[in-house]
Every structure is written in structure tokens, then in C-alpha cells.
Amino acid sequence: MENITPPKHVLQVLRSLKARGYVAYLVGGCVRDMVLGVHPNDWDICTSALPEQVLEVFPHARPTGIRHGTVTVDINSRHVEVTTFRSEGDYADHRHPSTVHFVGELTTDLSRRDFTMNAMALSPDGLLLDPYGGLEDIRRRCIRCVGEAPKRFEEDALRMFRALRFSARLDFFIAEDTLAAISQKAPLASSLAAERVRDEVEKTLLTKKPETVGRMAQLGLLDVFLTKPGKELPEFSAAASLPKKALDRWMALCLVLIRRGLISDTRDFLTALKLDSRTIRCCTDGVALLSQPKPSTPPDWKRLLCRMGVDTVSCAARCLDALDGGSSYRELKAILKSGDCFTMKHLAVTGDDLAELGFRGRELGEMLAFLLDYVIEYPANNRRELLLSLAGNTEEL
Figure 1 (tube, rainbow, N blue to C red):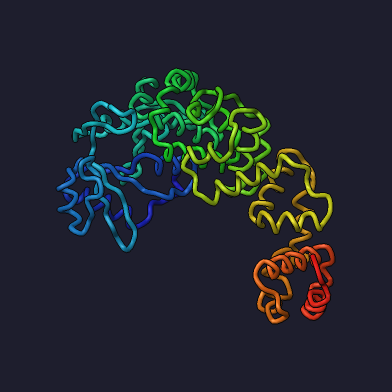
Figure 2: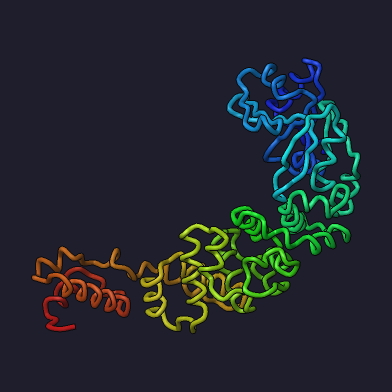
């Protein structure tokens, strides 16, 4: 941790608050990452100063979440969130506190946080405050709730997903009492917005342990999206060999869930999770494609590329290789690198060319399709003069 120094703009905020007589600390994920020797992406500060007082210290700051005590300070095009020490009331919706109370000391603020590794604070002079044993848990590679685990998950059900996501990302184990509380409180996950669940699942899919999503299913966190109770997906660990691209990982997950009978329809599953239309389309087409025999010849591959598009076919080939082994993607890459024509876009003649020969309407479209299929079979013949001659001498398709 001593090798990682907060950026100048972060230190400026800490020092400015201290100069005005307020206590301020770095908190949460940035402190955890520093302990782990990882450079944080975000820097969060908590302080004894009330939001109005923070705005007095930084007149150009923005009250981005002032009801909850958060002010965003912008310095040299960089921003830092500054939040007043606080405690929280009941969480009526198992996600957001109904009331927030500002408090004057740090320990109470840290007590409301999710896991011990996220409940540490670092003072401007480098003193680590760790009232809940987060440092020791990090050394043990353990994810453990602050205080009573069931209560933490009743407050915010998304924390159950976060526990599993952190375990996958950091390769930490989940403490026994915390894991038991996830199993006990899993039904609360049904109250979460689908977008929040989607984001946690996707972040987990993009780790080195994507099979952790199977753990989410096995614990019951995804029941509302599955057609029958979930189970672990050990075979999904092979998806770690896929590129860290959301489309690849989602398609592989859908394929495994379909094979296991945990979902009956890819489109319905992804739509329920509020995935974007491109991902839904590609995954639905790709999973359907993977239920069929794979192409056996280059022309078959090219016809498939023409019908379903490069993204879908490439992703499906990578998923097939990762989950079942084989060389489908290598075969496909050879075709893509060859430069052979497999779409109208790369055909050496256009509709305008055929129109000059007298083709119109449906007849024109059928001739283009005929010529494309011909070129797919005989790629060396994708030449304008030859194709125009062929069209001109073809009396019927």
C-alpha cells in the first residue's frame, strides 16, 4: 500500500478539508485496492464536514447526492466524491435507506458498509483505520460482512451479488456465516431491478471465474430469471478462455443454461435481464446456431456468415471451441482472412449493374442472390466481367 500515492487532486481535497478544521479520510474500495497493491479507479472521501460545509470549502463543487450527504468536487477536470459521516435508517425496499443521519465520527459510518474489506479508512497522513478487521480478512483472502450478515443483506439485497462478484474478481472465499446468510436471504433478490442484477452478472462473467454465475444460480439469486431452480455450472469455467467481451461471455452462459434446462428461451432470459438489443439478437441466433451441426466446408461457413453476420458466427465459434473443444474459430478465421466474398457488399457486381442488363424487381434480387451463391462456391470468379456475362447468359435461376 505504501507504494501507491493518491493523485494530487485527491490529496488537495483531503488537505483543504483538514485546513478548515474537518476530519477527512479515504474510504471504501480505494483503500481496499491500495491494500491489495492495485491502483484504484475511483477515490472516495468521507468527512466530518456537513454537505453545506463541503460546498463552502469548494464553492464550485456539485451537490450530486446532497440528501445522502454526497458532494462531488471537481479539480482540474478530475472529480472526487466527498460524503459526510452518516448512519442510515431502515431499508424498506431492500436497496435504499429511507433516512440518512449525519454523524460526527468515522466508526459509525464504517459500520454501515457491506464487507470488512470495504470498511477501512486511510487518513491523509497514511494511518489505516480498521475497526472491523478488514486488513486481516484481506490477508486471509476472505469476504465477510460487517456485523450481522443477514441484516446487511436485508438492507441491500444487491450486496449478495457483490459478495460473489468480489469472490470471482479477487479469488477470495466467502466466510461461512456470510455465505449462509446469502442462501437464507436469496429470495430478497427478486426485489432488485433487473438492470442492477444484469450489471453484477456481467461484471462476474468478465472475471477469471465466470462459473461464479453458476454459484449465484445455485444459491437462488437468479431464480426469478430461470425456468427452474438453479445449480452450479462447473463446466462454465471453460468460458474463462474466451475473450473478456460481454457478448462472448453472455452467449456462452446462455448456451450452458439452455443445455442444463435452466432456461427455455435465450431471448426471454436476456430480455428479462434488460440486455441491449444487439446482445439479445446475437446470443439468440448464436445459441440456435450451436444447436445445429457445425459447417463442414468453407462455402457452408460463408453461407452462414452471409445469413447471420460475422459477429454472431464468430462469437458462436469461439463459444463452441471454449466449451466443447475443437477448431471452429480457427477454420472461420482462415475464411475471414482469405478475403473471399460472402456478402452482397463484396460482390463484384451491384444491383445497378444488373439493372443496366434489364433486370428489375424480384428478378434482380434473385439474380444477385444467384451470383452471390455462385461466388461463395467459386471465390476466384468474383470478377465483374465474368459475373455480368454469367447474368446475361442465364435465362432462368
